[in-house]
Length: 347
Image (cartoon, rainbow, N blue to C red; front, side, top):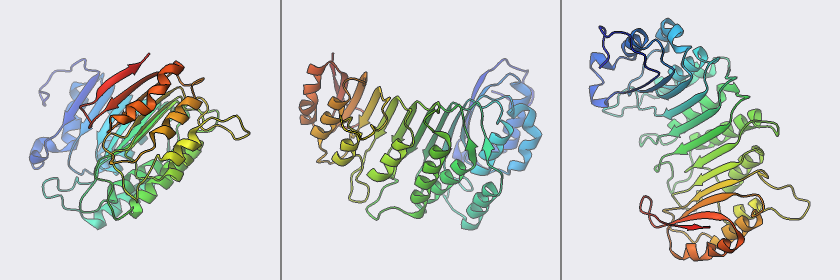
């Protein structure tokens, strides 16, 4: 255990996770935690910090010499603290993972103070956007909040808007947890998330960009929005799409989407023409999903795709895709509920 009396350690990687039930104890204060890390881990490069408590970002200035050395961060903190860490770390940051969870003011009662949340959002919006010249990997995990399902999406949108340029970005992942979808449709936060993500990729993913990998996992977007993102990311070689839920509000990656993904011999420019690896997962959809449309899309890309992974809830989905085994594609197909797939490989 690290404490005030610990001798300096040659640690390069450290993970700190605070139990929400300990939120009122002295050890849960972020300032004290970082103070101990600064004194005992002077060589630290990778920091995972999951702290279910809101902190004032002003104290981070005192830790600037420590924070500017970090190259990899994995943070579950309020977005004003996250933004301050990005600012301090902007010249060295290579990889950043952010778990957006706004239930930080009172992790036990899950109380939300709308005025406090708006103040945090405004505090980040009032700052000049930050450029991260060395950042290669960026991922967002957006956690649902029962009291306000749109709030975490709004926080993620604000954080995306706060990043102006990432010229070295190679991988971008946006993941929402299973509770971001309801039969009532989308709230303002989900719409803001798409607008901010679309603006982010438009700023940072021209035809000459470094972006190679895109992951859209349970995102609250429709087909047209997902296609807009793919048109703005023409350089990707790896695409991961996961869609657990199916409803009239969030029907996504349908046969129409797969049709747009096909490579044809006409004059129409191919979508993501450099795609070599594809991962499509629909493990829990109660779906009439058109597997023949997926098979047709994959068949049209036989000359460029190197491998793929498919996950479906129904056994006959495998049979509909089995024709691809005759075309030389290396493809794995998982059948069954999430976590218990039986896998078959086409060689």
